[in-house]
Length: 198
Image (tube, rainbow, N blue to C red; front, side, top):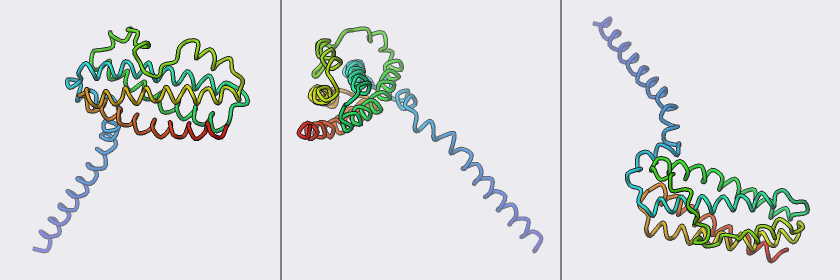
């Protein structure tokens, strides 16, 4: 009887260990799927409407200009350190968002529409002359000009994101729109405060 009990106990312990190991071994395989941007897009691709597609296409272009503006500032000497730090943060945040939205467009089959020129219809976009003025300015002047231009640029992005929240359907795109509103509203206030100190 004791021998039978011992066998059962060992069998139970073995089963428990197997389950524990199985649970541990599956965790790494599941984690990337949860964290990756392509998996959620794949799951909700059929839920994307025209507003989602337009939001992604236009925000990609909008973000690309913000990155370009940031690159101009980061390449200059004598830029206020707080402004350079902000430019780097904007670049670090918006670069991955561009990749994410490009992935969505590909998943949605909307990438063939990406050649359209939306610049004129987007709030906050700088003209070529505006960009040239930023590039030509010396460090201290460029610091102020960058803040003034980026405030307007961010305000345009917030408006676009608000439109997405009211007209969009895709959960990932709606989530990103809210993140843009939250992050860029904070940055707008930060830039206004910085302007007062320069």
